[in-house]
Image 1 (cartoon, one colour):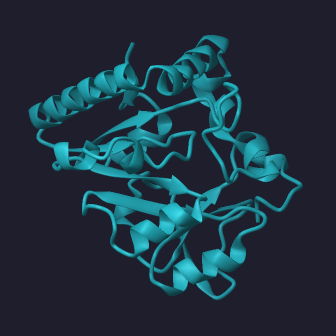
Image 2 (image 1 turned 60 degrees about the vertical axis):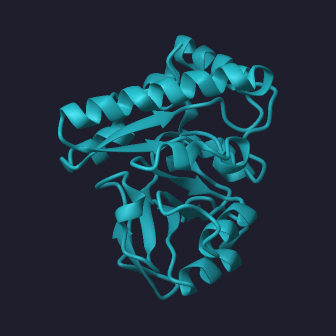
Image 3 (image 1 turned 45 degrees about the vertical axis):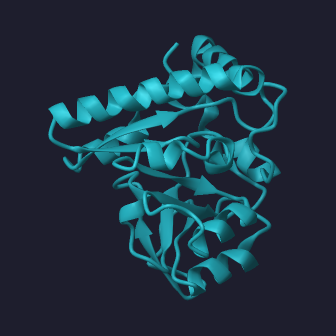
Length: 227
């Protein structure tokens, strides 16, 4: 079983089009969809707007595969690690053949502190840029305080109930992702840039808002998750 999707979905293709990176992304079953919690700080808004069922995720076979991956992560963690590392090695090899850099987004539809689960992950693959979004303040604080290797980048995600901490992140010159119905030039005094142009969040301008247009179910959000 392959764990990483490489260059075969809308999110990573946006990064691949830059012609600099080849991206692999891991999709698990979000929140408690699999009966295991992978998004501890999820809110009603983000669960309702989750991209789990967007694109190919609408297919039952795809959803079932993501549930199997999630259960394997919790129930067979060593075997999961073996498959994950195998996929990352393959990604690196493919990137070298195409003369691009490898990047990995492990939290495609989850919010797991991977550096705590597999402490050797980032050092073993020092040539890979790992990145992702998080709503976990403790994960973000570790990153902001420099407690993570240089090949790891986090973007904090705004939900309907965490804007005060988002302002703290922005004032410390880190990036916050916000979902909008229509992208403004500024929000609450902070510059907003179009984050749909690429998924490579580690290339974003610092201290600004990564603006994402509402997609799928998010277009009908009533919780305040979408601005």
